Every structure is written in C-alpha cells, then in structure tokens.
Image 1 (tube, one colour):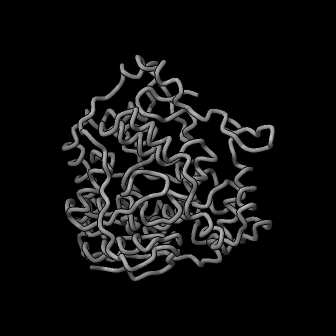
Image 2: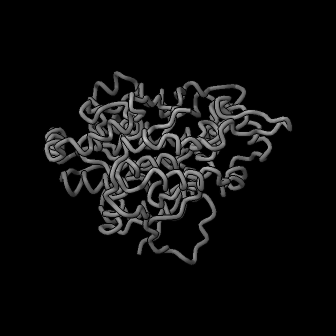
Image 3: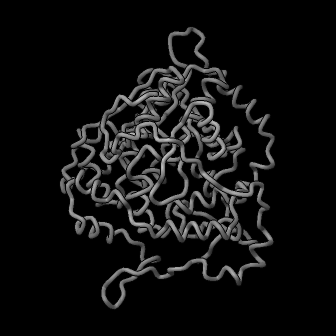
Amino acid sequence: MKICSRCLYSELHPLNITFDEEGVCSGCRIHEEKDLLDWNARFQKLKQITENYRNQSGNNYDCIVPVSGARDSYFIVHTVKNVLGLNPLLVTYNKHYNTDLGIRNLANLRIKFNLDIMTLTVSPETVKKITRGTLRKMGSIYWHCIAGQTVYPVQVAVKFKIPLIIWGAHQGIDQVGMFSHLNEVEMTRKYRKEHDLMGFEAEDLIDEFDGIEESDIVQFRYPHDKEIERIGVRGIYLNNYIRWDSKAQHEKMIELYDYETGEQTRTFDTYNDVDCFNYSDVHDYIKFIKHGYGKVTDHVCREIRLRRLSREDGIKLIKEYSIKEPKNLNQFLNWIGMTKNGFKFILDQHRSPKIWFRNENWEWELKNPDPFQNENRRKSEVDQVRLALVENECKFRHTPNKRTDFQDEKYILIGKGYYQ
C-alpha cells in the first residue's frame, strides 16, 4: 500500500489522492501553498468579494453562515462579523446526535455574537427512517447530517434572497489537494453529491424496502438550478483567502469567546466535532471499517503538514486511536432500534475487500494490520521531504466543563443551552 512520504495518508483515501515522483501526496503539495501565498493580498480579495454583497438598504442580511456547536463555527462567525464587518444570518441543521457540550457551545455563540439564527429540525422518525436507509445503502449513519448541513443554507439563501453563503474550509483542498487555493473553488451541487453525499442525492433514497417516501426527503432536496440562478446564490470558502489552521483558530476562539472543548473517543483532537456523540465515535469507526483509516489519521496528517507533529509521533497516535472501539454504539442502536448483530451484518456488506478478508474461522482480519512496517526501509525517502517542526509539542487544550453536575450521555434533540 502506497503511503505519502511526508504525511501518513495512503492511497486508500476516498477523495482520490495522488502521489508524485518523491512519494509526496497531492494534499501535502497543495498545503505547501500555505507557506508561499501572500495571505494579506488573498484577504484583500476576500474583502472585495464580500463587499459586493453588503446589503445597502439594511432590510436584509449580507450573507448566510452555516454553524454548529463545534468545527470552526466560532472562527467563521468571528471573521465574518467582527473582521469583515458583515451582518450574517446563522443557519444550523439539527443533527439529532447532539451533546450537551455542543448545545452549550451553540448557545454561547448565539449570545456572544448577538446574531439571528435559524434551525432546521427534521422529525426524529423521518431521520431514523432515512438513517436506516443510508446505513443499508452506503454504510453511513451520517448522511442526513451532511445532507442537511449542506442543503439547508442553500434553501434559506433561495427563500430569503440572500445570495452569499460563507463556508470555512473546503475538504478537497485541505485533505487531498484536489484544487489549488488559487482556483478559488466554490460550492457546487456536483461536488456535494459525488463526495459529501457519497453519490446519493435525497431523491435516490426513495425506496419501498426502506419505507422512504417523497414526503420524507423534502427537507433534504437541493433547490432547482433555476431557483439558484434567479437569486445568484454562491458559496465561498474562507480557506481560499485565509491561511487555514484549525488548531490555532480554535485556541484563539477559546481565549476570545470561551469556546468549550471535549475529549473524543477516536482522536486526540479535542476541538473539532465535540457537539456530536457519533462523529468521532460510531461514524468514525464505520469509516475505519469502510476505508481502513479513521479521523485520527486526518488530524495527524494536518498537524504534520503544519509542522507541529513528527511523522513518528503521528504513527504512534494512529496506532493508539484507530483500534479503539466506539463508546456510544449502544446509544445509537437504542436510538435507531437495531441489534448489534444487525448493525454488524450491515457493516460487513460495506467492508472493502482491499482492506479486509475472512480468516479460516470466518472472522474478519485486516490484510495489512501494520501499514507502517516498512518505515525503517523508507527512512531516506522520508527524510528527504520531511518538514522541520516549528513547535516542540502538539497539545490540544481541555477547557473546564461548565456543567459538571450534568451527565452528558443522551442525545439532546432541542436544548436552550446553558450560559455562564
């Protein structure tokens, strides 16, 4: 299996990673732009773009910003409101797997920034029906979250005639270098379907077997192209104009706005996705079953590229976290009404034959249990493209729990938040 000589992504990455003659992946090569581009000039370009969308009459918002109780939301809102001076409408899709910590972070964000927010909460029974269907069809318990998060802002933009949507980082740029920052890639229906939604639009889920009908997918249906063209909706990504560093950005938000962090089951990153019981737990475990790597590899590669983590320490972290069992599986199974055996049976249908095989006892085994076993033999190749560290350690902060008397162990569908 081919593994990047610099970071630790392998050829198994589902976003079609490529490798050059030095064995360095496309994600690492595009990441080099972060140290080469004139980010002051890039930011001036962002100001020019957004200034064209400032509502001069004062009777509407300047733009839409999708948010959650985690994942760069504070930094994006801070940049849009306090740096660019725009008046955004915040929108959020209720993912149903909410932690109390995430509800607290979202309440704190609403209050600290004093902005209007719109929330889409789909009926729990509809979400469960759709999740059973997506688990069966594509091995995903998270399709409805990604679909909702990426469609609701567009629906609001069309309905309220607010043409500009501002997102944070484009995954295809930041992980695998699918585009240069200079391409200034924007939100498209095509990328959303092919990569975010694993090839399935909402209409593709209508199925008698799963009991999913037309009425169940209305909230996930992407607006028609003519509606989008009529309003002139466009979605831009801040990481094309700002040197993106998720760890540094979160730490700034902790200092400025009291953003709360939390321990994650399957990664060392305590900043991202703390609003969800499943993202770095059951969902990430499924990712490991399907693709042979988990979120910890994403975070390790990001920190290696940002020169805060050595390749050797990254390998230790991947070995430590990749094999961890999800803590919240029973909680998910109770929610959706499924047995553990039923869940395992469905997952087995989505195991990649490139990664797994049945042994003589008909048990699943990894074909390559230690993908880093050739590291010593690759030392010369690795050292040639190694980046010098700029920080001596890569530590993520644990902020004090603001609600120590509360057991955060159940999904919170709707919560007012707890503000201190």
